[in-house]
Amino acid sequence: MDTVGSGCMSVSIPGMEDAECIMLFGYNPSASHPIVSRRIVRAKEKGAKIIVVDPRVIETARIADIHLQINNGCNIAFLNAFANAIVTENLHDKQFIEEHTNGFDEWWETIKNYTPESVEHITGVDPELMRRAARMYATAKTSILGWGMGVAQQKQNVPTVHTLAAIACISHQIGKPNAGLAPVRGQNNVQGSCDMGMLPNLYPGYQKATDIKVREKFAKAWNVPLERLSDHDGYKLTDVGHNVDEGKVHAFYNFGEDPLQTEPDAIDLKRQLQDLDLFICQDIFMTQTTMLADVIFPGTSWGEHDGVFTASDRTFQRFTAAVPPKGECRHDWQIFQDLSTRMGYPMHYNDTKEIWDEVRELCPTFYGATYEKMAGVGHAQWPIRNIEDEGTRDMFLGGQFTTPDHKAVLMAHDWEPPTELPDDEYPLILCTVREVGHYSCRSMTGNCRTLAVLADEPGEIHIHPDDAAARGINDGELVRAHSRRGEAMTRAVVDPRINKGTVYMTYQWWIGKCNNLTLHAVDPRSHTPEDKFSACQVDAIEDQVWAEQRLQEMYDQLKEDLVETASAQDMEPGQEAKLSRQTANAIV
Image (cartoon, rainbow, N blue to C red):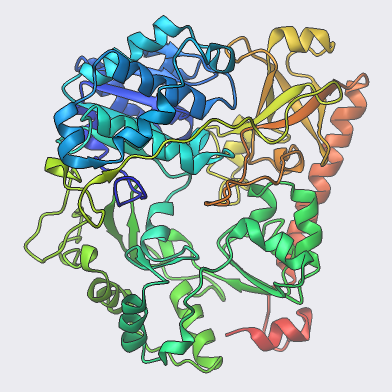
């Protein structure tokens, strides 16, 4: 957002097929976004050049024209050198820079110190190969620069995004059709959550909470005194645990998330959640997080309610209920409405269309996205400012950015090493990744028997053959992965496609929970955790028979605990005593 004015994908996912060059940085679409991956394959079939920058030989690297196998934790150093190569080889667009950007001279003062040769010991990339990639990206008629959690879940994630955006700007690979920036979200409808103000510093439509005019507008629409709307940024999810310890947070309303599965240093986080005075969870499945809740509100699943979600490329899509809610489940908006009303602020909506129309009226960039326009297979891609507008496939056309003066702001940063480096006790780097078999943190797919047949507990840890041999670890064996924070049992996959000295764990497993190991270190601006770099060790387990038996015992016990906690929420008439008094009184 800082560089170009809007922190979103500036291109469309279908438009990726028509780019001449696609560069993926820290992003494995075949595992995390298969539909996007298919678009990239089609682009390749149409003649596009593919550049992959990743420590692993991911699936897309196998079809790439250039694979730059970087070292873990080098993002800023690599990108600064990549930008240096563009400028020193005179591949930058001086006219576009002059007319549509600010700060180039100051930006270059930092970038000039990062030649591909000077940082080779940090990046692990051959300088000439990096220069080849820079030429391929910068000289294509249209290039798309995409990134994922390999950028977002790093210590310097905001500076990295600044640098990625600057590279697109100086090479004029933005501001024209089928060229630009393609940051993808980590889960379904994360884009929609951000659009709707599920951020601690923004109202819906990316309107700043610190802006008095924004607060006045929302205060009037919601009929509340202006002073009731805070002019300060709120806490981020990664702040919650430490703020509990410091006595700043006493209650936590958790909606559709499983932080004990997804957040770093999960063992410490569990203790912090247990220390809350009040913990509310609203979800559709029982999870390890929901098991700790004082109050549980059962929401509806995607097939039981109407609404709008946003794809990663800003495309609004409407969906309708296929079946009515079962049991005591209620629409999420109804729960929020009734709870708000009982707490003293009346809400009165009849359906999701009323809510959406209010969103449209309060968010100028969404106004043209009517329910009618999104009926059936219709869609609307924001910004869409009026009813007649067809939406915006490519943003910033003509170099018109959404900054105050419509110019991009170039910002450069020096590279900093990761927070926790390997040492003699913990010599391996742990990087958390996704796998395609289960969705996200597995709360929605973990109970699917078919998927369990394909992939089940305790998940996998991918380890290089040399690292496995040095530890006496064979492919398929159960192993003990541990760090300064905790440990997990998992299954070894001896994998020659990864880099030596690094292990990779998928984060959706309940027994093989990688976030028992990860470090609670965050980017100072975004507060996103540094999940891609923690020091760890992996040990062989000599008695595999015992390990398999122990694994099954832990898994059975966890499933039994989940079922028991969920069963306690089932109420028949006259059986409210199954629930705590606090829970029973809170049901809306």
